[in-house]
Amino acid sequence: MAFQTSKDTKYMQLVLSDTTVIKELLTYRGSIDDTNFNQGICATNSLKMNTDVISLFADLDELIEKSLNEEQILLLEYIVKDYSHYTIGKILGIPVKTVGSRFNTICLRIKQENDRQWRKVTYINTLHLKTKRCSKCNDILPATDEFFSLNSSSKDLFHSQCKKCKK
Image 1 (cartoon, helix red, strand yellow):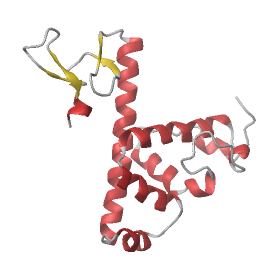
Image 2 (cartoon, rainbow, N blue to C red):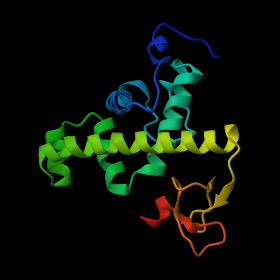
Image 3 (cartoon, rainbow, N blue to C red):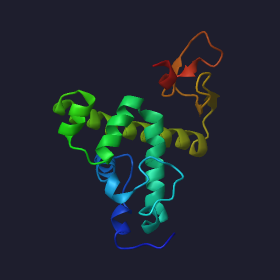
């Protein structure tokens, strides 16, 4: 573990399967991490954080990329830059109330993707379940009805595309 300061101890218990944690990390990210979604960039504030915190933000960036569309990422960038909901609403042409509800949806989507990734790894690496490759995204996923829709005419009883790609 890298050098840890008293500032970093507050991040020790943070998990990305809690929407409150995700919301706080995103809301205060601009003051904590000045890379702001630029993976691989070594920024000045990043050097002051330990590797656990840097890793947490890297994982968060990966979940954002996998779970959000461009419109949601744009709204998120304004939140990270500490714009008020009123200002974001004016820029995007949406009601202020909608900004808050979309932010809640963004946090929920990130949590759901984190949970999905956790289940994927657990099913494959710990439970050693049979896997199947999605024909669209090429992800190797557990061959379960949680990841693939049932298809009685298929040899393995699952559709060739995962549920995420079929949406």
